[in-house]
Amino acid sequence: MLPRDYVLNQINHIETDKIPYTIAFEDEMKEKLDKHFGNQSWDEGLEAYMRPVAIADTIRYSKISDTHSRDAFGCLWRMDKSAWHIDENPLPDSSLTGYKFPDISVFTDDIYKNMEAFSKNCEQEKDYFKVIHMGWGLFERTWLMRGFENALMDIIAEPEFYDELIGRITEIYVEMVRACKDINADGFLFGDDWGDQRGVIVGPDLWREHIKPCWKKVYEEVHKQSKIAMSHSCGSIHDILEDVIEIGLDVYESVQPEPNNMNPYELKKKFGDRITFWGCLGTQSIIPFGTAEEIVAEIDKLCAEMGKGGGYILAPTKPLQGDTPVENAVAIIDRLRKNNLF
Image 1 (cartoon, rainbow, N blue to C red):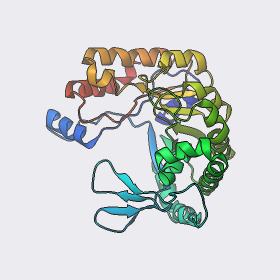
Image 2: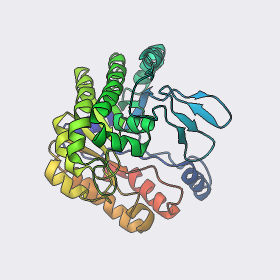
Image 3: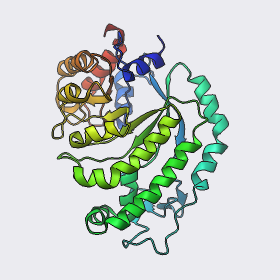
């Protein structure tokens, strides 16, 4: 089978003789591995089952100084420090009076302009599962525009305003997805952090009322194109997993095992026949703090139990961080290279 077939079978809940995987590394970790191996070819033999072929970005930074850029929605970003952060939100008050949303053509024209390159990427990566990457998510965009605390207050104190704001953002996202209909990719990967370590950030009830209907529209547009809907979320989203399955999410990415109620093996028992889990190897726990032997054992257990009946793609829940012990990173690399043993 081709790498693409392994991914599609898992998403269709068909067991495979080996588990497809993805892995990424922060630059500091790459430098440490270059030094450890004595060269930059240490990643040879790591299979990339899933390949990005297009980016439908929602940022569109315009540089305004050596230190700052402004995105298409009007957020002022400080760019010269890590991590980038927002110095000015375009909506200081809970009102859209006087605010002008970016024209959809700002985003869709760029997609159309790059269509030839996207098509070429799809042809080059035809043996792999081809992914269209999106930018910030719907909930995230509301707090980028309002400020995090303000957005959380809006949901409670100004729900009509919040619904109008996230509704207008959703219209842009749906049009962006629609603009990608002729890209011969397999799926879209969205990102929207709904959870923290404790649970759903706004609580499951408010998420269902204000955020769920918007993502339903986005996923419906993905499925109209016969593509697969994949979403990243950090934190604990156990309490809304039934909801995201209901509105059409096919693949849930990250699946951090450390937050409340996020034991992947329990999630598999409860939801595993209806959604594909992508991730589960904890970058807050076993990767930095376990031994190499413990990490290998956990990889084997994830592949055996999460892959049972299909519905699993193996991955660390985040790119390997710069403070990951080198011996632990090497253990992961070596185990993935032996993936044909699964």
